[in-house]
Amino acid sequence: MQETNKGTIEKSEPTKLFGLAECRRGSWQQSAWLMVFLVGATLINHWFKPAGASLWLRVAVVVGPLIPGVLFIRTLVRDLRRLDELQQKIYIDSIALASGGTFLFAILYPAVHKAGFIVEMTPYDFGIVMAVLTAISYLIAKVRYR
Amino acid sequence: VKNRLRVLRAEMEWSQAELATRLGVSRQTVNAIETGRYDPSLPLAFDIARLFGKQIEEIFQPNHSGENK
Image (cartoon, rainbow over all chains, first blue to last red; front, side):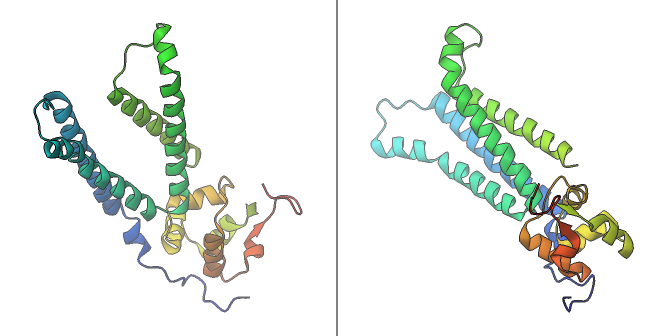
């Protein structure tokens, strides 16, 4: 038998670590960086005219949106590490399924498009496909382990 | 892997939420372990055993001898 008093396991403030406020703050940061990235990238895609622009300006325009993009990924990974092991499994499974599904879809897309089953898609649409697949697989896993 | 977590928790008169708080995991995780839908990692299994003052094998047993789920 271990010489440990029952019910006195020492943890570093678990209620605070997994509290709702903590999750919400992480989600808001994720959403904020993602929005900044998407808005920045969209503005550049629509309005930036590379003709006549200097090399440095073109580099800045390409690298600029990457900054909020990298911060979004950093927040995503940091929030993932805050979750407990089952939540991490659910999250990682969802991302794996979405990544795999989007990869298959992207490879098959030209043939499916030529066959007339799908309208023309932009890179943004593939992002939406991945987001939808992630959300669906996440919800299924949440219900499964409820 | 089957376990006696629900029985032990009932003996302590803890809710799933209370046990989850003591272990530093979510209530969903406690429920998934109790219903056998999720097998905890070794560190979490040790934490559970330590919390109840028992050995791991007193709480977790393979479904069949020598065979895990």
